[in-house]
Image (cartoon, rainbow, N blue to C red; front, side):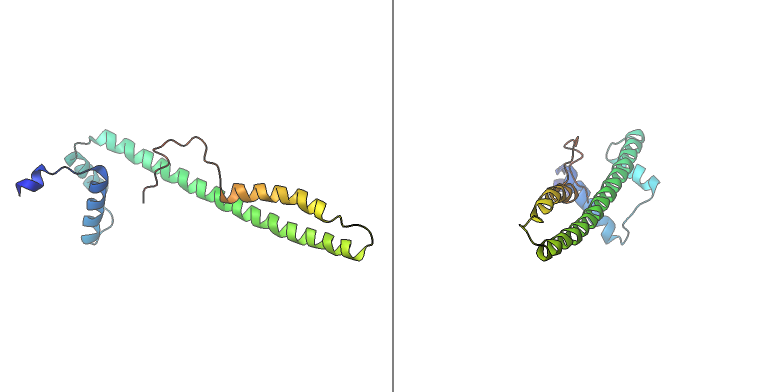
Amino acid sequence: MNEFLSKQYGKDEVDRIIRRALRMKKEDSINHQELIDTAREFGIDPQTLETAIEKDKEAFENEKARRTRLLRRKARFHRHLWSYIIVIGALLLINIVTPGPWWFQWPGLGWGIGLAFNFKAAYFPIQKGMSSEDSVIVP
């Protein structure tokens, strides 16, 4: 029993153990008072806990807004892609049925560059101003 009293646990270990204990208890949540009591047992005062709760809510809302923005960008990219396919396809048909040199590739190239930037913004966004704490994804 003494070995358990002297063992030190890191933050990640505590998090995993508490989550596992909640799952074993068949509950995946605790009420606010239980959270305050648990925090007190870890030496965390209620004011610090309330601040952490507010920051967690804010981080959750920010993540939700970021995901919504990415979904909108992806939808916008797909609309742009379909417009590109239809218009460039029509220009190709016009170019095929009219005499003269091939020219449809030039609007296709110019528009394709814009489409590539849309693709990058939708699927590989730049995340500006992220601190190392913000970049950690908590399950």
